[in-house]
Length: 112
Image (cartoon, rainbow, N blue to C red; front, top):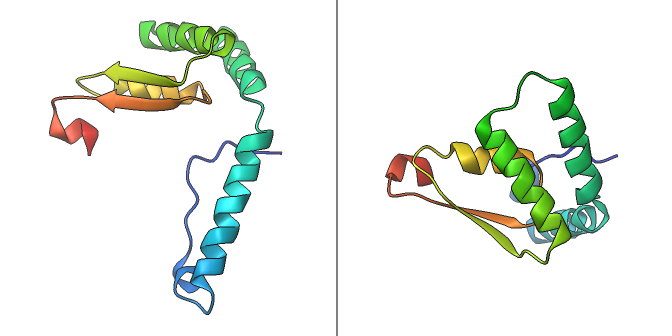
């Protein structure tokens, strides 16, 4: 079962060991395979079910849930958000959409 990890990191021993290139290639292949078998639609449905059972959702959560549903039903390639705080991009990422999320901001502390 996939646990929804957002990041994989090679440890110091692996990245500078005897075969760092092979370790990186194997990790990339593992990530690609996980992306191929990850059921984005089921993950979205699970998030919706959890949101119904939790406290009242925020406006951001409702907007992002709706955007993810639209993206699932249409051929959407990418989400582009304009944000002052990054809140919308984070709320959208919690929906686990298969599309790339691009967060744009004029505030340097948000985009770092």
